[in-house]
Image (cartoon, rainbow, N blue to C red; front, side, top):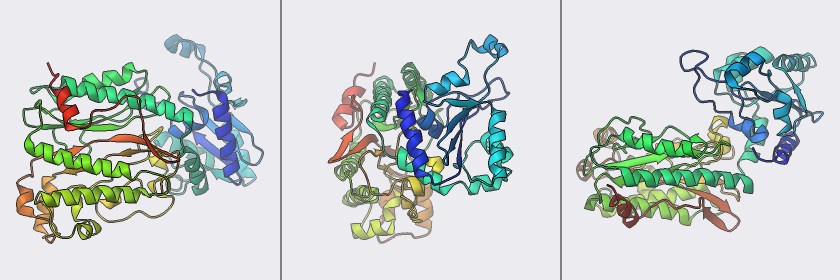
Length: 464
């Protein structure tokens, strides 16, 4: 945890940002794998972590906007629990670590909510993604599951986002721990991968590094020779000479802050000529994005820089044609780049995704409905304190190529005969994490992930 003053200040600021009523913030419960006593790894809700820092199942917080009181509720463990778990701190002891003095059990919270309803006070809550918390709120408020899902407190969402979007110095230091461990994971993969290994062999080795750092992985690892599938979590393929291996993974610190990096490198010790050409183009688009990172620039503009670079480069390779600006404006480039360039990052790798992309990533403005652009998670004007990813890529997706060709889609911009020859190429992306500073940007992490062809091939040649 951070020092208690950090959480006290965050709690006070939230109370100032919300007009009236009571705010209910549920922490997460354990989630059973196949029966109650065999749960998945516990992960606390990120907003609860932000305001209270306690990673313990079964807690709920109540912040009373009208009188400024903050309370933490949970049921203390019993001696019978200690038999299985060892002695655990009680709720009051844990609450003191985040500056909360008023505590109670879960029944006390229910009584408090009943009183609030009696006096018709406003009860505010965030969007929920766990069914147990939806059921709790249903019981407390009398609202239906549908209402809880579709009618969260918009003012509260904006208040939370307006705090969590801006990372403090102590948060940056914690994020960089996650980034540094993630860099170690990528370097290890580049060193140990050999033809004949399975994708799973790499996953096992790098996830050990994440856990050895005191935390865990920040999201399910993507480690695949089928890089054209953007979120491929299948790890059963055997790797062969001539293939490309795409690794997208991250480490989460013990406090829940994330790193998120991607690399693409050859299963062989060197890239082929064609792989070098497309890898170089992806890298060029990456640095076109980085050059545009600064306060006042929208991330839509950053994304557009990647799109224009990719379209122009593919045009020089004979895969695209026509006017580059027009091709990007109409979305023809999305055949090769059907996703966004990056997203906010912090306590979640897609920071606050459960609170809504239009608020978090667009400041409340509507997103585009155009294929490709609609998948851009971040489009708003950049501000000092934002932490984000940069990860443009080029992907050859056979099913998408076939569909667009059968529809004669964008024939003014796409050379399908040339494209079809690369239908089995796969996909390439590289990803880094950046902080927006007062005068520009800063690459996060004290360790640097290999990016250039020379750097990658140097590590690949260290393979035993």
